[in-house]
Image 1 (tube, rainbow, N blue to C red):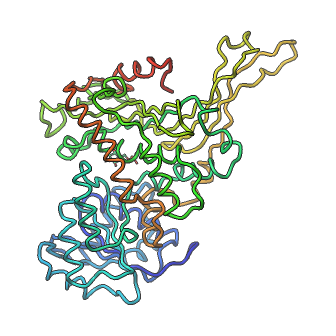
Image 2 (image 1 turned 180 degrees about the vertical axis):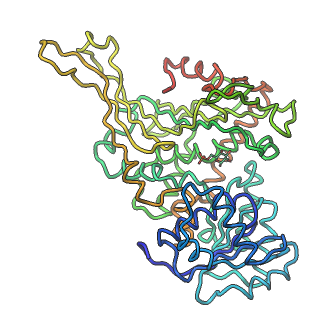
Image 3 (image 1 turned 180 degrees about the horizontal axis):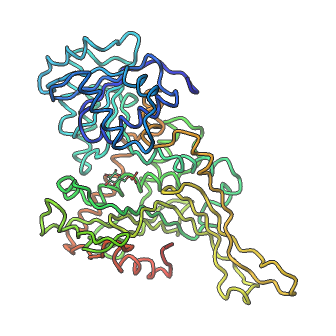
Length: 487
Ligand code: BG6
């Protein structure tokens, strides 16, 4: 076994034949098992409403790995992994059916981890079914995925449903960005290195940019996406989570409670965006037909299943201010979109310019230092500095250079996908990397205000051609502050 031991689990996957389970969970669990992170006694109990049995499920899981695993399946690892499977057909609308699950679970020797890979409207039946069948103990856990609601009210309903049966400590709300190595590395970078700790506030930082650009479109998920839009789908969760890691105060330790408490303070300090400032602070966009990697791709309104009248945004850019002592006067610019030029997730911290420039021969305007944190596709950290161009010609001329702290090569040795880490932490019983109820609701409160203001503004999203970096209005947003996006 690798690293920390934990009690074996019965990992119950509700919706085991669905998309999330086939695309992500099977692959991640297999990778964990292959790297010896799964307890030998841990079982995977696949639950779905469709008829099936262990053999059929094993075939489906194998096919999913063939389709989604980025490397060949290792026979020995697969044999060990598939030996963990059980399959149960279960109609969640009947509480009685849960007794069948009870007959399989081994609550005495294994922790039950219920993973709900199903839409939120089914959560209630599962929670009450588990409760009525006495399948919830102090030890059991429940894992849910975003979308945790559609707005504050619906997220409160989901949270109430969960909390009627499970304590907050037993609920693991996943944001898969919190499983990404580089997001976690932000904690190390900020709080283990005095060079950053002492230079992390309005006195040294000019502004911060967070870009989560995707080159994919909506990938056949029109119905879900159109109700949600990029603000709810990406910004309410992934971008705000990254923002909390950049902006939070040092937690007293690495325990879940301490980290959650600091993140909530950041979310509560976000300056509201409402009717009075939404026009100046935000940009909504929607992709039209364009070219990606030389191939023509359809616009959002031409996607399969599209409603051609839709005004859902596939791109958002905004200026966010954090009203607290540390960040007074430091704007955070956030941008995320589908069908952008390339897949790129990065954080760029711009430090302040030098107060006086003695190198005017090289740069009339001395460029600021930048800390660039790449999350994907490559992972790593770079610092942009100025150095002297080597030579003995008697002049001191400068050039921009990068200190490359890339850790991709070290990371390859590890299991590093977001889901692997989060599944493992849920099995270990550590909910530091999951989102608390208070965080979800604080994020929705802030996002709901933007959504309402957009509604009142009744402005259509600005078109941008697929394959570009979004609408011109996003450039204008920064230009108004005398800045440009890091492109
Ligand atoms: C999901 C969104 O949460 O994250 C998708 O629902 C998005 O729309 C995806 O494509 C992006 O995840 P990643 O890890 O590929 O950046």
